[in-house]
Image (cartoon, rainbow, N blue to C red; front, side):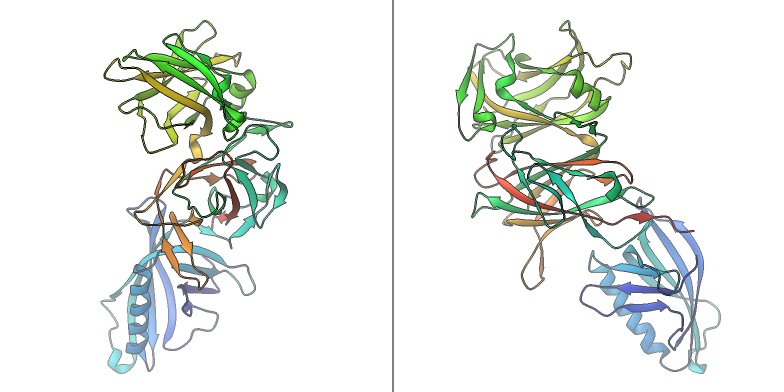
Length: 445
């Protein structure tokens, strides 16, 4: 590939030039020999032949070895590439590097030496990351931070999503989304859990995928022994639905209608449910979703998921809406029914505030490490890391990651969704400030 310069970049360290328009002695030449896939998907290994001549060969090699050892000790090492002087730099994540002596031309004592340099890097090159304009009812095209609520109920600004315009996503390849999330409310608490989802083609003609369904909008299922609406100013929609049952095997609890608008936007894609409970759930209960046609006949069923007693947000398995195996179904209104399974017939109660249908294609969960606390979390989508930054710039890793994460598609609108838990659960009136970053990926010849 054409190259004017190639530099190894490390955090808080000077760059190490591997190639430049005017090579600095003792480096005389760099010639690429091969490029092959790595064992890790999305990475490649490149091999270059280094030609060294003159004084200081040993010192230069020792310096490069020291730089490569630092590469192995940080997830933030990069290669910077410029094809020509004055070009915009391109970057690749550098995962590892090592030197091997070339079997020929080993005459360091006479001032000449060759070595093979191996670099394991990300397959694709990317441009410099920049903040993306985000929009919702709380602001339009904000790059410095947009407010999201922990629910969506039609109240003033009560939206847990942000829109990214197609024109702001450039490049030739899908690229990962990075975020900064700062907890605004409740004060004095930290982000213990984050649920992040993103999907494209969820808006059109002024309409958008209606992802939020309230508990009070559900009809009681056939196996409910009691059902009631309870007013709660802190709940989404200011109310939640309480259901009670005793049947242990596949008790039908609640049923929501899925509108033609919702199904039209879903277009057969997979969505995961996030159910918010207004009070702790009963122990040992599994839930599953069942999709029904207009006649009440089952079409598809999700795998069961166990209710987590310490979580206000309960995440279900993915479900295709409508089912892929029935492409002839027109979005004419289906129903989604919540079923419960348990080991005994003791009376049980579930307080359902809302559930959200979030796209599975860009799903990511962050869970706080033991002892970690952070009111502001940085998500590095490129390196799949979550961390906090001190005022002095020091980094501390705070959360584990689960899920593939969002890959933004150039030229496609994107909607980003967020829900979270703090020490006090998942209060719907909680607020976060969100900032998004994106580095366009490119293919090099």
